[in-house]
Amino acid sequence: MAYGSPEFDWDVLTRPDVSSLVTGQLGFSWLDLHQHLQDLPDDEYLWKPAPWALSIAPRGKTSRRKVGAGEWVVEWPDGPDDPGPRTIAWLVAHLVEAYTERWEWTFGGHTRRRDDMVLAHPTAAAGVAALQEAVEAWQRDVGALTADELWTVGRSQATPIDAQAPFAHLVLHLNRELIHHGAEITVLRDLYRASSSA
Figure 1: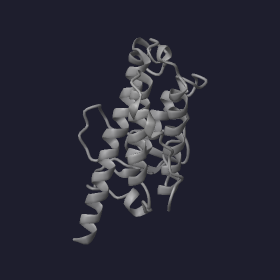
Figure 2: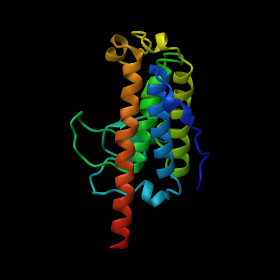
Figure 3: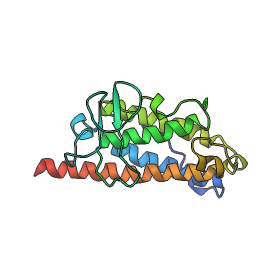
Figure 4: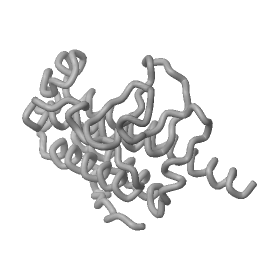
């Protein structure tokens, strides 16, 4: 299945200003991850690299901590340092959560938290479409900000740290999330192909 390819303004990489730096990194990183999500089948999306891997599950069908609204939920780690493996479905849902909640508390109504949002989708097509919608909404609205607005302290109210930091730091944090989890998704795709061929 193919999803609409994101547009990328290559000229942004030649402009020497803070807005171009943060939006260029986000745009190029999303372009790269988007390419790695093409033709993702459902069995690979839900594949567990280990039996105890965190994933998504129908509501009421998991004993783990749950996050998200809707019929499917995200299994959440017990603590911030939980080293356990994750499925691609989990990583996609986590990115949907990170971008959607930060968008809500920066550009949205400042009312919904992650447990009010549908984050988990049982098919690769629906999960990737939700991620594309979340990233591109964030990308669009961040790209419309001026340099002064990017330096505004407290522009996002999602967390106490966000409220105390210049907004550009949050943009870079979400860029890092996309790069970090995008790399994990790419490795999981490699591992799945290797395990299938073995």
